[in-house]
Length: 186
Image (cartoon, rainbow, N blue to C red):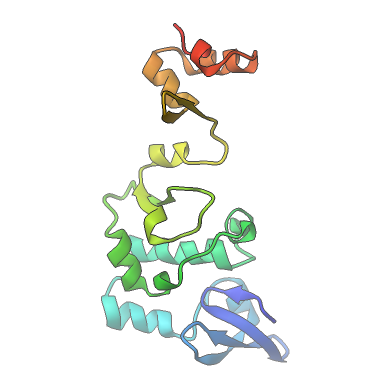
């Protein structure tokens, strides 16, 4: 009880391998537990109805990104849950409706773009989400080291590129205890 799979929250087991669940839309449904655990069933059927009747975008890449966002944040069995929902990252209530998500985020600019949070310490909400290229995504990770010089905050990679010093050289200098300003001198 209490486990969340997509839009479904498990209420109780009504018979062996079958769980009674409440959907985010308010409906109650009975689901074979393995359908939930494998992500084959994610709602009472409202996702399918919304996809066909409300927006016609259920096969779109934007819809896939929207669903993946929910899986990362709300499905404890998702492989990335520990980095999202497990860290306390949430999705704003407004975005439980796919069309409101689309209004706020807009269409994906290209197949190379993916959904990205601007501030990795905050969840999915209108002011914190954008479509990003792989290069932008790689700069927006918790692994990056950020340095501020003259009020401008950039990653080591970006500072190295700007100063025309090899990134490996900058990183080696920083490991030796140099300041970022010293490490960027050609």
